[in-house]
Image 1 (cartoon, rainbow, N blue to C red):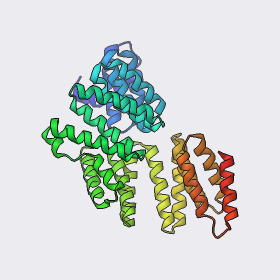
Image 2 (tube, rainbow, N blue to C red; image 1 turned 60 degrees about the horizontal axis):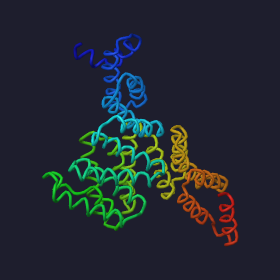
Image 3 (tube, rainbow, N blue to C red; image 1 turned 120 degrees about the vertical axis):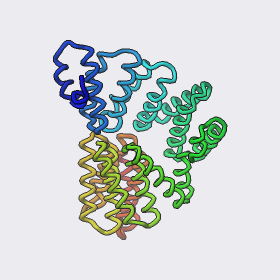
Amino acid sequence: LGPEVEREAANVARHVEHTDDADRKRRYFRLAGDQAAEQYAGEVAAYWFTRLVPLLDGAERGRVLLDHAEIESVSGDIHIAERNLIGAIKDLDGLDAAPAELALARVLVKQGGTGAAFDLLDDLIERTETAEAWGHLHAALDMKADVSTMLGDIERAEQVEAHHAALVAEHGSDHEVSAELKQLALLSWLRGDLATAAEKYERYYDAAAVERRLVQAAIYAADLAGLAYETGEVDAAFQWLDAAKELTTRTGDRRLRSLLLGNESSLHAQQGDAAAATECALDALEVGLDCDDPRSVLGGVAAAALLHRDPLPLLHRAVVLADAIGERSFVDELREDIDSIADGRDRTWVENEQARIDRLI
């Protein structure tokens, strides 16, 4: 069939879905899924990939499971993503499974399984280094450094960075040798070199936008908003948050959007704009509920609580939710929120509220 029919793959797929022509189903289900994914229509892409998988086997099935999992991990069901990635790893041979293993490590981190993610990454790093599969190795080392830094394990992140830098210098392509490691930007931020960090993140953001890696561009924009805030550039922080939110609208990443709205709410509150802060906090809560993401809901509840006339009941609910999903670090942040609303009350009041938190968890 000609290019016009190729462009109408979804319509053809809907037609052949009710036929017994397996070959045409495989062709047009795949085309329809790919086209929907390119347009960030995640639910549509997931629909066609789900119907395609039973028609395939082996490596071909593994590649579709991987593509479906990447959509679910961003804007769908994280448990479906995990199941599909495990299936993809079984279907793909050897290092062809490396992208699925990396994606599974990301999913495990999102679910709080950092230990399992490190085990998976360490095994992949060992195999790819032995096989001199440098592209997969660089990606695995990057991710291990990212996760280490996220957990505050800067010593491990720097060890990974040093290992990575040595491998790039010894075995990398000209591009890889000249390119600065992504992790250096985050480490510059943590060390207080905000100007260097901002310069690097802007370069990453520009590259991701040009290459249409919009999910990654949104994350970089969010990072740049945080850097702008830390340097006192409030207007720039709002601009970067707007850029990140616009990208999440295009990609359908509701979890990141909820987080961004929570950050925007806090920023408005610090600027004394209670109306805008309340609106953003409620939007964050609505988006978090819509995507069934308890962490996003938690951020929305906490942000809304601090703007409420009587914040304590909402803060107590946030404590219970944080404890239920294992976010004990968030419980500590909520303790600080209790201190911040003391408003001249005596220390006994604060101690009683902290004791109530202890009873809630």
